[in-house]
Amino acid sequence: MNWFLGHLDEVGSLMATHAVLASAPLLAGLLLAIPLGWLARRYRLLRTPLIVGTGLLYTIPSLALFILMPLVLGTGILDPLNVVVALTVYTVALLVRTVSDGLASVPDDVLQAASAMGIGRVSRFFKVELPLAVPVISAGLRVAAVSNVSIVSVAALLGIAQLGSLFTDGFARNYLDPIVVGILACIALALVFDLLIVTLTKAATPWLRVGSPA
Amino acid sequence: MYPGGTTAVGGLSLDIPTGQITVLVGPSGCGKTTSLRMINRMIEPSSGLVAIDGRDTATLEVNELRRSIGYVIQSGGLFPHQSILDNIATVPLLLGWGRAKARARAHELLELVGLDPALAKRYPSQLSGGQQQRVGVARALAADPPVMLLDEPFSAVDPVVRAQLQDEFLRLQAELGKTIVFVTHDIDEAIKLADLVAVLRVGGTLAQFDAPARLLADPADDFVADFLGRDRGYRALGFVAAPGLPISAEPTVPLGATPAEAKQAAAGADWLLVLDAAGAPAGWVEPARLLAPITSAELHRGGTLARVGGSLRAALDAALSAPSRRGVITDDAGGLVGTVRAQDVLVEIERGPKTGAP
Ligand SMILES: Nc1ncnc2c1ncn2[C@@H]1O[C@H](COP(=O)(O)OP(=O)(O)OP(=O)(O)O)[C@@H](O)[C@H]1O
Ligand SMILES: [Mg+2]
Image (cartoon, rainbow over all chains, first blue to last red; front, top):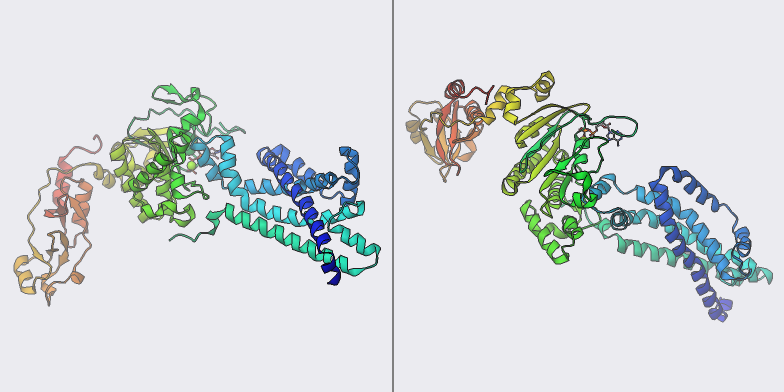
């Protein structure tokens, strides 16, 4: 506790970096997963390769991916971009299936009705399919958010500073306090992300929170 | 023809009259939905053409075509994430009407289809099945399309609500005069709603295309006759007016009359007709059994009412369903005109145009 109070500033700044490193890939991954999920839903032939293929990406060990990134991107080993890109890959891996499932959850008669009224393909996607897929996509997003918060800490092994640094630091000095603080801070961050996603989802789906027929 | 080679509809050629209700009816899988969807190009015919007002629909921009055709399906297909008002305003907005005008129009339609304006802000899940179906119709009507396609729009609701929706549908059509193609597998619904009925066989070939009365009176073959089912002769009477029925005056007493008054009015008859305060028929009583002034609870209400100038079927049914066997005839306002007996209706049937050749 004393250690924590003495290092408030440091923990705060590590947490801020951690939040950025975890959330930027979440957004980027979502933006990439939407078109990929759409392709997987739209073209039956692409479905298996896309979902299995992106799913396999998740099985690459994170440390390996962090180390590989500089080779692929031509960045320095300490560049935070490595973490962002690697986590984007993981997010895409988790979300392509979710987006595809979310789009599949939209009732067929609603789609038929939309087309029959002369709503074009593109606006049907943005005005009907995507909004109705939000609940399913949001569930996947919550998993990805928590997963990102936890995986970011691995990057501490490469010397990229964030909450994970508290683990390496505590371990190196054989000192428990920073490790405990790091764990608690990670949990707090994950909870904040989760709460944020739940709140945004509720705001985006007002029709789900109304009573049944009068 | 679907990929895989199912010919869902083959050799079907229909001339659908403008401003009337044409009903496609036939057993499940005979291609009714497929035919309907070829009209708004949800399905492109592999051969043949669909023309509206002489224009081949294949030459039109597909979304423009669809916006000019109202489409209603069984399940409603309402957008769960939009309010009732926004659902109805969909096509006007697509046509670029502007929000205010589209919403004003949507409000107008809510009223037109008999929905409480208070429902405007609700979501579809907050409505009953019958209400949702009305919203579906309102949404299809929103941009005032000349052509409407309805695919079993009333089959997901209970029989009472269905009958209500059908009656309102006819009332609306009398007002709007749309060119309507209506799909159902319920022959009674077809006969009730249609100006023209097209009976389809599996494979999408046309078995018969005729007015309902003609269909009942003269089925083209065994398939059509089977499909029409029982009581065809009786049901056909529903299309024959009975202007010349002899209507007899009927003795009556008002509600609240004493047993003595009732016996005197009945003059020996077993059953006596009772009128309510407004002079409308309320039911029958047996004067001999009366012990106290007539109350509403004692009335026998089995008899159906027929309107003067209504069909022979209604008149016959009124006679058969009344305990006195005298069918009550009312005017349009519901006031008593008199009664008819079944035998008079039968004489009229014998005398009138033969239903075999209406
Ligand atoms: N997308 C499709 N692909 C292949 N075959 C189809 C497709 N849709 C319908 N069919 C077939 O075409 C035929 C006609 O189907 P359609 O849906 O038009 O029947 P329907 O008369 O509307 O039946 P119902 O009363 O059950 O709604 C059926 O044999 C059906 O199996
Ligand atoms: Mg059908």
